[in-house]
Length: 135
Image (cartoon, rainbow, N blue to C red; front, side, top):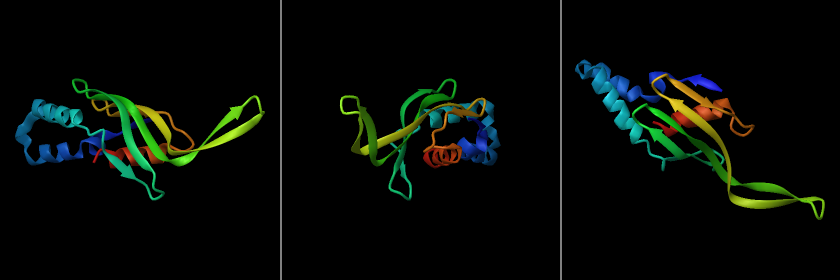
């Protein structure tokens, strides 16, 4: 999916600051955006109603271009299945940190968010989790 996020989605706070203090100018706004962008907290975690944890990880941040590549993960106890060819059967293993994740590319200059979805992380959930994690 490719989504136009707009300044209101990611840097609403910066837009409000600019509105209140028009003397900042374009260069100062860009500097402020870069500082906020470079300071994104990868340790931020949110939780859903089912007890799952949602967080960014493996982020590669390029503050000079306001671009990020990384992963958005949903972590919750679950079951992994593998195949045993010797017994010709499935083996289920419980994992307290089962991870479903998507990789993404975020370009603030061009107001783009590109990502692939999963059955467990669809477009609506990805956008909801992004907005909650970057607030």
